[in-house]
Image (tube, rainbow, N blue to C red; front, side, top):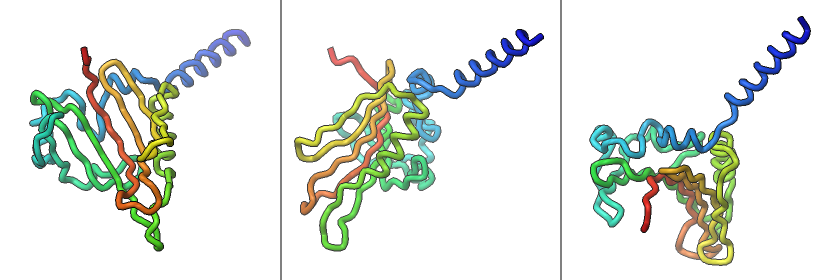
Length: 179
């Protein structure tokens, strides 16, 4: 009886741990942000998209609904969806940070760390550091890369007394072979 009970408890623990641990398979299986899915027909989202312009990447649309401008309670300022061949190719959100009272830009990656913590919980430890602090702008960020999609979060810092403001970005996009 004890052995059966212990085996039963062990199985419950294994399945519980397995169900809470996430991986890149979740990113591959559901590459979406708030219901906008990479690879879905762009027309599916016509009620929330406003055409902006065409670029080398494809047609670029602004998302017109404010409810889409937050990630894990972090308020973003802009959201773009890029379309290629009639399908959602990329989802991009960004936030700019103002100068302090003396006009200096401050390096403050706190919200990047919040995004990193939440995404690490969701997609696991299989990420690449994108950090490069030896150049301008200084880059702090991470990338999760599945088979067909990638997700990047990046904080760009251009310097203390410059015209360019620090920026936080989130980019979920379709991967393509480049050969």
